[in-house]
Image (tube, rainbow over all chains, first blue to last red; front, top):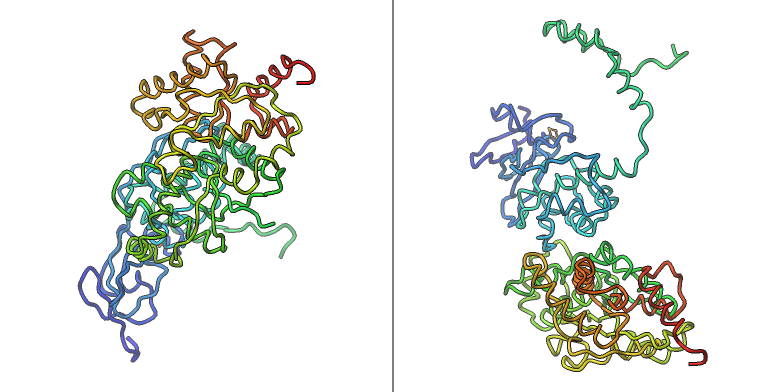
Length: 232
Length: 294
Ligand code: FES
């Protein structure tokens, strides 16, 4: 550690001195925690690292992604990386988006009292309650727009006094909208057709047969963006 | 002229879309354009008033706070149920400082609501601000002799002190219909309950009550029943549909159920698209049977 004064945080009630200016996730690893679950992309995209904390002297909870938020002195925290919230089973193509499908599959949304607790819990700063309200009136486009940056961490559902599964519901809204309102991408259709008739089969079989080291080598040697035509 | 701050409520954005379309169009024609309250939320519905806790009032108060934010002194709802819920909450939190403080402390992400936003039903605006004469002036295709039953149900008029007219003998909807040139058909069921939310788990009960309202209107020759609440509209229409299918009612005499704003749109000669086909047909029929010069 440098000569900078360490930051004191409390992980599940136990005090740790950690280097200042690191993320909660790095601090937890520094303190000896090993993530098996509760970490994924480490880039703020996967939503696996939902964390709740309270600052000393503050009456409110704060919510964060452990991989994004920096530690602060006197932070009392715990991870809530998973929310047991059932996701409705549906066959997307057979849903009729002229009905209020969201209310049908997630009837709890009708219990919303506009308390806005979900919004306060969102580490992405989304207007969660407002998309639940839009869902109540069947406005798919609004739900999709307001929930677009959702990373499915589930903290909204964990806090909701009405037991709404906001993030699953919004995902259904976005899916419905993409089925009913977005054009079918041609290249994807083509590709799927090709794969169904056996394209890439050999290549896949070969990969499946490789051992871990050989796979690693292939992975690091992969071409991420094919060089543009004519470029050096 | 300042636009009226308008609270649509969820139904008008979904199942009662024709209520909203006609409302917006007639208010525009009357020179009182509506401006939708920004970021409004569900009113909480009258069910929110059934429990004695402040939590269920948060929804309404959040809407008042948003009205306050745009310096609106009132919000106007066309849906009788939203109106009733919002007004009851306003009447409480505008004077009950302790309740208001508690709700404000809970909604700490918003500005404090200071009290003072009034809630009005659209019919009050039509009666008290626009006036029947001004409405009559805008009528280009009077509903000559169209017999219409003015159905109030519960939430427009009850409880007294909250409702917009005499709870036992209301006149506002009838007066409006007369200004449109219609003939008002009075029935003893004008202020009876349609069955309301009972339709969710006691469907038979709601259908039964709604059928009584329909039958009373049929006996007295009404061609249309005018409503102001999407739930009344739903219950009456469902009862009507079921009774027609079972042969308990016949198409020729079963009254069309329509929002009062749709009748206004018809009388003002607004875009036919605003009117459901059955209402359009009823209006045309009544015009055909009205002798010249009446
Ligand atoms: S680990 Fe993926 S969002 Fe934090």
